Length: 547
Image 1 (cartoon, helix red, strand yellow):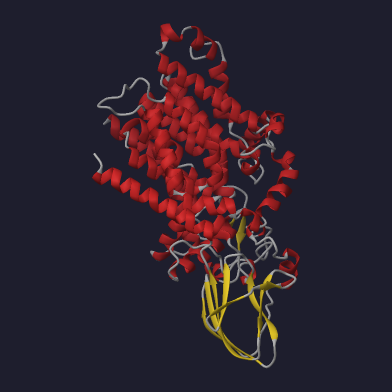
Image 2: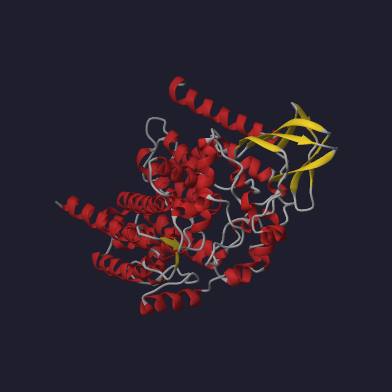
């Protein structure tokens, strides 16, 4: 009966947090419209037989962009599965968000219960699921990558603590890397360090490696396994506008810091007003309260903990609690302007937005809440009530209603904003570096029409057509140039030029010609694919053949 009550309470709260997602209309969130356009483009490419979609054909008014060569693919693979099952574009996004929220809460509960008991697990799960930053990324920003990334930190630590299975851990790290590469940059040192803290009270048995080393090995294997994704993105990034985007956004980074006073004021105001907006960044009062309690020289306080760690607590418990408090404090510090001196140093330059560390703060605060709840059921009840009060306004935020049907996302993607909104279309940073953004803004989708052109096939990564030229001339192909593109004229590879806005130009002799445009696999992609294939073979041999 006790288990039924605990699981029932958890599932009720998880159900309560995901049901508001399923609105009968499309919410005009900050990034959601752009992600839905990307999803359709990704799905169309999959249907054409591209197992690893790279070029987004519908992006940038149909001129295309190498979006998926650089952007995290896991949310789009999952979204494509929901489209394949018959759901609409908006429903696919809703299911993806709901699944991410549900699984993140479930895995945090399993981890918290294993570490701190039932009360600790419940508190950790509700804190993690209802923390304002988590709900803000889901309900206001529709940040698919970050939403999905919330699932993996507790899952990885849970598998490390309970299963101790290298293959499962490797797969989870691999999926984490594909879910949101920026979150992986933030969490990798956190998870590796916690891996060494989480299990010293569980001595290795049967020649099994210590948990910290097991987690490190799994991470390194996952990095090699995912080389097909991150290695080309890293090497080819200078062929796109993303480095310029980093510089532009980095120049205004000061506006992205969220001070402790700002977060506290925002937390109170959100509760008072009962509604949230796009800039309401805060880790929330419950986690701020947990951090203060952990620092007080009381029974659960840090000073008492350090002084009496040998008498009152075992070494593992003391290390765990101190580590979480340090992690919470440092991640909060990174959201403050005082940390600005760090943000010109890699990997912070790639993380870009300081407020993203509220993700780490939420994770650390949730586990620290579980630590303290283990000692006091009264505290656990108070924290749960306060967390639900703090999170409720984020479930019904102020967003636009997108006034178009799902079929809107099957057309060429707009550039700056969807009609009637000011929402980001997620275009600029993934354009080829020579693409002219001003041209896109002014063109309104007009393309060059070439007389006497017969299209035989038009796909995401392949285009074939016949053309008849009366004289020697240059043919404009309505695709933005990227080094992967190869053009074959009558079966022979031809030289590619560019016009003044970044489109592909091919010089043709008089007569009728057959042309093929192919988005080829670059040398670095070939190398990366071989590295990933080698990792798959290694894992197979290790799992099934080597003893």
